[in-house]
Image 1 (spheres, rainbow, N blue to C red):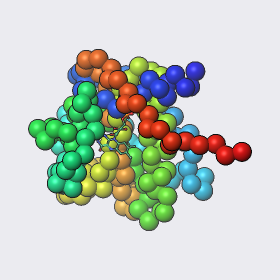
Image 2: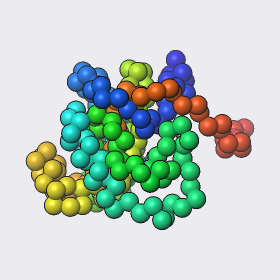
Image 3: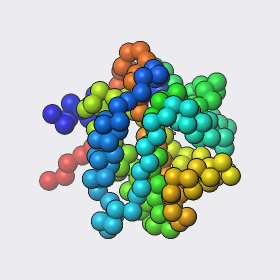
Image 4: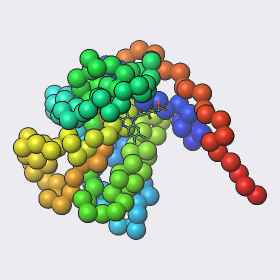
Length: 191
Ligand SMILES: Cc1cc2nc3c(=O)[nH]c(=O)nc-3n(C[C@H](O)[C@H](O)[C@H](O)COP(=O)(O)O)c2cc1C
């Protein structure tokens, strides 16, 4: 059931080196390609990277402009610590062997909303395949350097596009985390 997949998904930040299959990445990209999108114009672009060395480099670039001081006092997860929880983490992609970069048209009002709809479809499809994932932000910052702009040019990303977010993919190292209890009074039905 879809609800089983929704509840089985966790943000995973500890990965083995095992790479995901190309056919699995194709299916995850297909799920993104069918996400709802504002105006039905299908503006977002997704680029899948199945190359651990490149994924690691992009993960380092993802933290280059990360300002921890803005997040003091926050805590994300004890079982799957994020870079907010642990200042020793230097890779914003946590050693995942694959990443999908989601780009949006820079001047489009709903670029972020569209991108995160794609990301959600991807993490659910990954869960069904037994692949662990995490949505990662700071898209624009990651590519805001000569090196970042060179990657975008090499990959054929149009000049009026910029990265919004990422979905990292791989196989969990260790046990699945427990889910935080749901906060009360967050959903209501009015009849
Ligand atoms: C918009 C958005 C941005 C996120 N950015 C990051 C991120 O940059 N780094 C990270 O480790 N997790 C990121 N996450 C994952 C959240 O931390 C995670 O979804 C949250 O802690 C709830 O845990 P769960 O996904 O396991 O239910 C992001 C999630 C969303 C929806």
